[in-house]
Amino acid sequence: MVCSDVTFAFGGVVGGVKSAIAWVLPVIAVLAGCSQRPAALPEGPASGGASAVAMPEAGSGGGDLAAGAGARAGSNSGGASGAAGQSGADHDGGGVQIGPEDPGNEPLKPRPSDVVTITQCERPANIIAGGPFKLVLEWEWVGPAESEVALPLVANLTDDNGDGAIDTGDTPDVVVKAQLGGFMVVLDGASGDVHSMFPAYGPYGSFPALGDVNGDGVVEIVGHDEVNGIVAVDVDGAIVWRAPPDPLTGTGTITLADLDQDGRAETLSNGVVLSSEGDTLHIISNDGSYAPPLAADLDGDGALEVVYGSGGFRADGAPYFEGFPGLVGPQIADFEFDGVPEILLTGVHSMIVLEHDGTLRSEASVHDPNEEDDFALGPAMLGYVDGDAELDIALLSNVWLSVYRSGDLGRMWRAPISYGAYVYGITGFDFDGSATTEIVYADSDRLRIFDGNNGGEIAGYDLPGSGAIGYPIIADVDNDGSAEIVVAVRLAGGAGSRVMVFGAAQGQSFMPARRIWNQYHYAVTNIEEDGTFRTPMPRWWMLTNTFRVQSAITESGELCSIGTRANGETR
Image 1 (cartoon, rainbow, N blue to C red):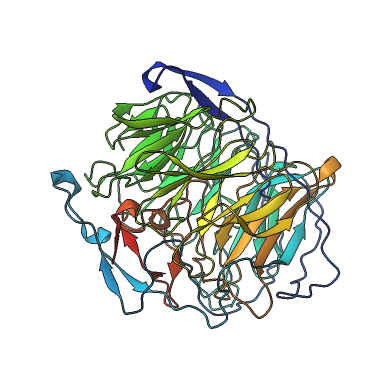
Image 2 (tube, one colour):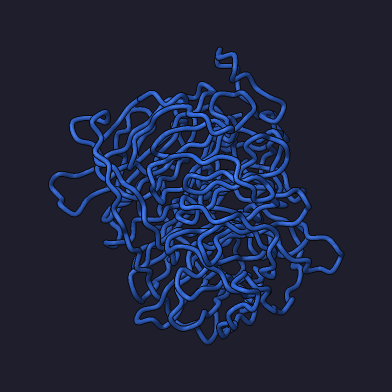
């Protein structure tokens, strides 16, 4: 289970979306504990020697994030990776050009960056052919007592093979911030060994993000300091830049995006936009929620808009549209397959879909009136879970994981989950190369992989302990060409935390996956595998048209798929 805790703002819709009643509902995510590492793993790669670590001394830098001493152990396991989170008809063949048709909207004509060569993935010879299949614990890191870690992130931050460069030839690293315990830890993705561990701060429920924000070729970790300002640090915790404290900063999760498309990323967090050097560019008056902002070029003008549940804003901070304060999200994809994006927001009892300019497209109740405890809170995953041409919406309530059609917002199926495990998110991936997206979720009892066709569980792993709220992420964390699932867990009774990595059983393989998952709002094109930001950013709804779904790469690092879907077509 992902050990994550957050406070979101949620909105209830009474008598229609336009009479939305918004409120802030604090949700304290209690994360499930996990069993101790088995003495021997009969299946799967051997343990890489992950070990318990003691909390470092508080930093000596006058309250700054102090650089922590960390062993630079780890080795490059070689290989490349990539996994198909897209869906489509299965066929063989060479590369195909994926790009949008002109929908007739002048500002949304295709740009060169929207036309990307996506080749057909080659299935590994030992690929698991359909479920059910077994998950195997590859390694586990044991955190300090009384700690609580949340939302693992993945990127390359260390030169593991000693060639003087940090790139995809190195082993990816797993970065986890402690919600309780006051530290950040950087773990080797192949072994779980600690690269570095240093003091870290920020409000309970806020998550950092990873990316080369200043264009220096090195991935930074952007989070919060001890006074709830925003700070960028390197892999050892040394400060790269620090933003002055502001009453609006420090209250929410970080999103990185290159708003002005100059090749360097801006930092977004609950009402503030910072430059690539940490200077305040704009203060945006959002609804005061913890729900993270998302950046996307909604109108095709080449600059990215910033979207909250409460509304949209231009890259320069000017208002773009008024939204619905208190709703969570946003999630963005092309629901109508016309090249123009839609925006999905969720509330306590409802979800709504906005056009790219903020006008209301549709709404639907996601509440079962016969079940008092059924209310929707968590963010959604957008993908192709049943193999047809229609985009699907996977959404959590506190008792159900449900899948809805994007066209009429009708429910396709639902599967029960453990109570209280709904806040963070669900992710998707085509583990077996079947051209359908499996749904991954970690609740208070179990890590689960659901069959997107019917909601049946095709794989799982028991995670006993306290209640957990999951956001499992998917990436090839050891660079072996097979996807792994990374979850963070809090044990019961204050016994500490775990970061756990699961893979396929020995002698089997999942489809390869990208080697990065850099932030809470993850889409395939919002960051390159090396942590840089492509200029201009390809619009993911014109390519894979998925959100919170991991995608495939070839050995050379290019996107690939088993039948790629773009704008509702298999190309």
